[in-house]
Image 1: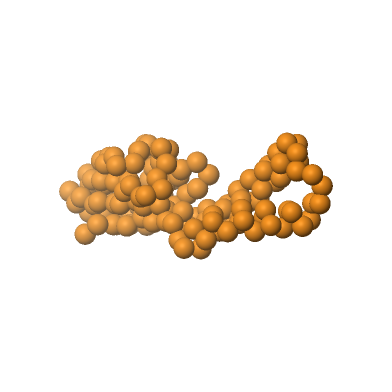
Image 2: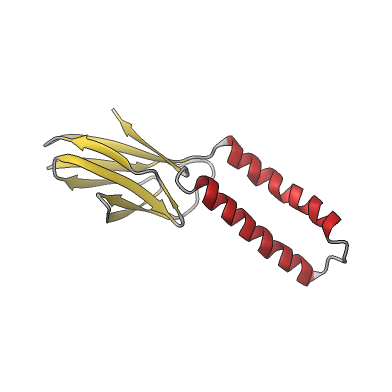
Length: 140
């Protein structure tokens, strides 16, 4: 049997969620940030990926021989584009909404705006970052 050590590396904007580990398409376990988990797997070719809420990592294929030990580090991938979207989308949306909706801003209108905005951000994240949310690296 071979051994795979998985380490979730903490990033500055890390949440409190757990990560599901899939090896060869089967859910193998869960892991939280700063944890290291060890899994024994048979020698040969394997595929691994991780899921957290609605995001998943790319599927990585690797070879492992008998009695070999591999270390896999998983990071959240915060690209500069995503950071810029997170900063500027609320500002741009607020500016546009002031010009598009000349009515008084009361609680109901604000609530409708926030629901639409949250849906827009969710869809953008799903389309642009669904499979790019994690970085998976093998440590040599």
